[in-house]
Image (cartoon, rainbow, N blue to C red; front, side, top):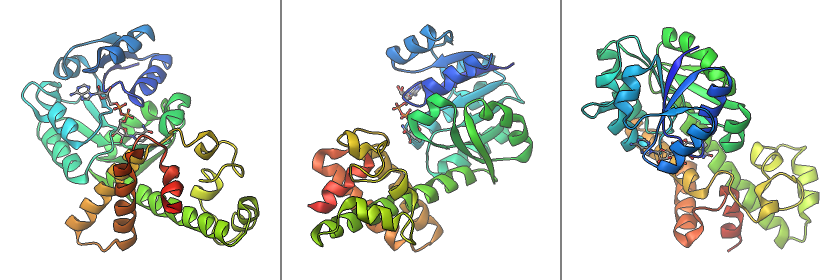
Length: 294
Ligand code: NAD
């Protein structure tokens, strides 16, 4: 069992840390939000004020933070994780951040003899709670081999995607597909409405035809065909439109930096940006159908 410093105990980090506690690890949590640390304490964890102090005591450090700026700050600032961790400590960043920041932090960690992985997740709060997340992991094979059993205690599917930053690359490519396909499915259902075709009939046909995709069959944006989809609960999130926009922007930044042409991704980012600006950022991202409808 390991002593794990867990930094960022929000919607995702807290249930992930709780699963590590259940697996028998000693978890020392850090968060700037006192409510978040209180919840970890209530679940049997201990808490520490500073990420650097937790890192100096840990065999493994896991971070689950909002964005690249938070990750750079917590790892690279004086007294932060990279400066404070003992050589050989395994560092795993599970946040969704830009590829450039992920590679920069990994390089700084490696220079100090630390093993670093980027390991963003798919599966949302439900997957974090159930311990069924998918982890997309970038970094050295040796670090992956050491991390795999710990990731298995928080997830079901663990894939090594290659070198540093490749976990983030996989995550933003996946979510670009998801953002585009949710808009495509929404446009199809809105067109069907206008053509007098019932939602359920379109679903019964397209879900068994070449239009089939996850956005339709697992997360259908109209109420009815998939009882568990957020459309059946007035688009309560789930995965918020603001988070989808964050990931679409990350994919656009990466595409620009790499010189890749992603016109559909750019259109999806634009449509989600206008949806979020209309005040719907905290709604589930499948609520985009209401924006498509006008
Ligand atoms: P969240 O805002 O609920 O949690 C982030 C936590 O980090 C907060 O508790 C915040 O107080 C803490 N924090 C911020 N700065 C800190 C610092 N300097 N030191 C210590 N703690 C700090 O966000 P979340 O929903 O848990 O998402 C975390 C990451 O996971 C994001 O990168 C997000 O894109 C990604 N993600 C989220 C979901 C989802 O469904 N929520 C799904 C997949 C991936």
